[in-house]
Image (cartoon, rainbow, N blue to C red; front, side, top):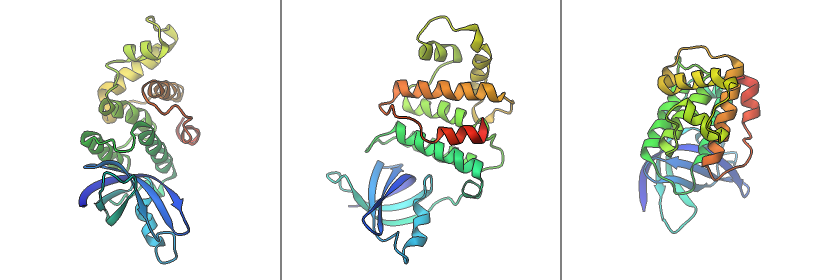
Length: 229
């Protein structure tokens, strides 16, 4: 059966000589895997641009629930990014975002509210008003709202990850910064020191590992730290 949906590309792997298997988080159907034939051939290479991570697509797909791999009938660029592909800092953040999404959802997982948030967050990353240094931290905080384990405030967050009721005085600056980001979200205009940002990112990665099934190392974090922290 043919179905229409919007989708955000997460990743792809090579398949046979000229094809790929691409993972796409679709708005209406959830996380799906599709075989795309011929896109690695000389004639098909221009279409590979459609399947780069975090590309937002309008899709017409074959959807048969009994199959783990389906096929794409039609794919069109829904929102061409103006800066992410050409700005190495934004590209590095995008790598991290794609990995964070991939670790957070599983095949078949469907959440339209999460999809809408991700689409808006990516458009914000591509825009002029974004504070790049804060984006990864705020992104993780905001996405946790849609995954069902968002912290209500900084104190409860640190009590959970430190597994103790008394929060050390050493992290008071981090508590203040996290409370600010929880309230202000992407609208935050404050400058947060690099040391505090690094610590908050490390704490959030621990926080996610406590709530997710995927406990593997974060491959994109090393690059992210070099770019921003």
